[in-house]
Image (cartoon, rainbow, N blue to C red; front, side, top):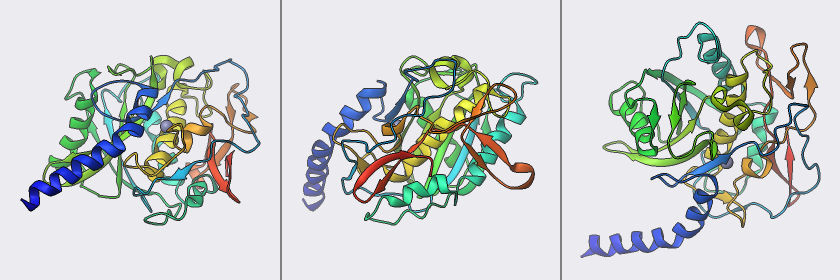
Length: 312
Ligand SMILES: [Zn+2]
């Protein structure tokens, strides 16, 4: 009886949170899993990326009581064929993503997320690099939402990636792969959570290769690291990483429209600088040989009770 009552309580809670979650999930794309999607670039121009609004942003973001992740550990699953000699799907392209994920923690850019307090745990601004693995195509090249979840759970239950309750698992696809709930047509990436049987809750994200639809899922057709597709993906990865940190279960930080922090600053870049190859960048991260320029979207900072889109 006690278990029965608990189940009804869970059901009531589920109904209570289902409405705002569903509204948010609908904004970016359908599919069979509730998720927070990052919509396509609405204003691709071919020129300098948009600065965006520098004044206070409304409606204000607020804490709906859900968990945040204090210091996320990131895991990457390279899905598809990332061994091509040219184009976006190269070993050099993978290195751009690793360099970003290994240098974003502790940066002034990621520290913007530390303004999301109070919460059930304190966001430190740190990001730990976990591990990477490959999946050369266990679910084919047309991935449903549930196939993407299976790719994550398969990597964990198969022992290729460890289970980490503070982990954020990224499925990064090569340019021959699509996601059937709307990659390129409705969204460029998304994040959500699921359950890995025998392990527990897992937070994960899909980010498709922007080379597949460069004017929809990137801000420019050349990149600061000479890989337009992957350079475009890095901004989407940053977006999903900050949302999965501040709203990992889709019940913590979002505004009255259901927009999470990075959604509110999507496809805006602040001050950018041109490079000799014709691309623009707005952020330099890393040390030594891993130092790179990136074009990364701004994120929402809480300052004195107001919200601003900033790079740091
Ligand atoms: Zn988003």
